[in-house]
Image (cartoon, rainbow, N blue to C red; front, side, top):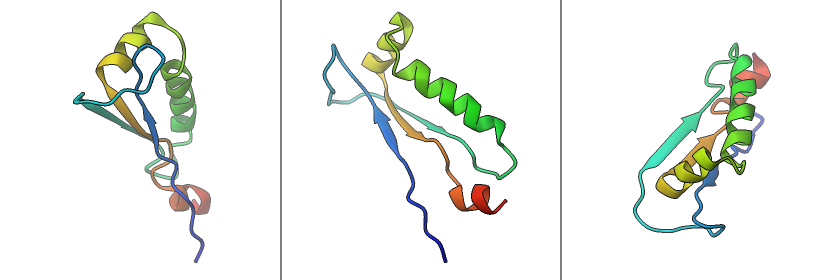
Length: 80
């Protein structure tokens, strides 16, 4: 039995600082099924956008907390 650690990212920010408080969560997941290899590329682009300095994403980060699981089913992806 092999165990794989799940990566769970949480992104939220306000003027360069991590914020606390009551903001709605946006949960983003990918790679639920082994055959969804294109979802890895979509997640890569999504993560690059969410950590960028784009004015649109700054507004999103100020108003939402993003909970991101890039690979929801690593055992299924690895074992096919």
